[in-house]
Length: 252
Image (tube, rainbow, N blue to C red; front, side, top):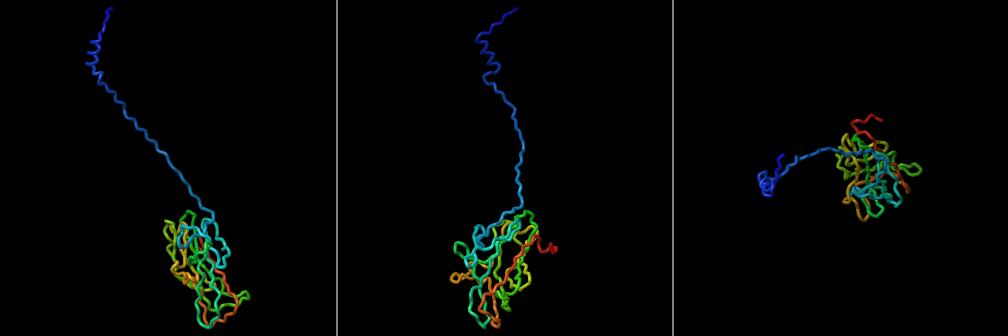
């Protein structure tokens, strides 16, 4: 059996020959890919929606009646009529001439005044459309049922305001005069329109008389020939919000 002995010089020579001093090991690159998913689900809201400022729909407000009493709350549900202004045409001197009286502007709890308005919210998440209408149920009358014959309530300068990115309702009635007992269509949101909260306001702050706190966008005209008693007159207005657009209405 032969024995081999390597000297230091031999090792150095071998290392030089094999290139040990410059040996590099290259590993294969590994890339792993795996997808995950994110989920979110929405459902129709049943929470009431606060009235907003008709001049700044991004701001919640508290409307009050002209006598500073609290206003009635709106309706709840995913399709809701959140608010509609009460109208007060003030105390006026009896006249034998034709007269037009301006309504008081909508007062807020902070003492400021904004246009009279109605507010609708569609949080159903269906984009199926809706319709808003109004009806004066009878002529203005006293508590003893004495009518203010020929009196007519008119709305002008109506326009929409919203912070919603949804397509606006396609039908917007800008001016109208109420006929007692007749329903008047105001807004119609067709399919794909009117999601979110929409303010239907009558004029802007430019239509408000800052000294009298009245608005020229909502008026009451009374013929001079009408018999007027030294009493208070009133009439109820019914605002109706339906969950079908006009072109799909079935009478339900």
